[in-house]
Length: 163
Image (cartoon, rainbow, N blue to C red; front, top):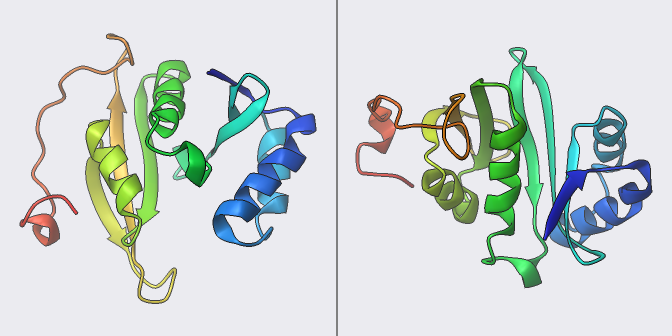
């Protein structure tokens, strides 16, 4: 598998993957603009698109992974993990955020496996589906610029354990 910065020629395939996963093309403009800013990434096995990741730095001027998509037929093969780790590898040491809906348990498990720390909940974005925010501290050491960060207490709403 190869991960590269997405190019304008990738936009059509990226929109098609988004439509396959989400059922619509409502993020076409987001994908196009993110690629133009060189903040889109594609994962390919040979020539086939098997994943995409979009990020930006509009979350309090900090890096934020906005969208991670893997086609259903390629899930559970480490593609999402590889895309996330690629971003950790190329990012400047500091803070990296992402989020997922409460109902997206696959993404929650991926964040936990990558050592992300639950950072909070944003209510009222989607009806009855709160957004969970995760944080990673990136260090300038180790294979993914990470080392054991000091443990931080979980939010009281997660006292029963990770979702």
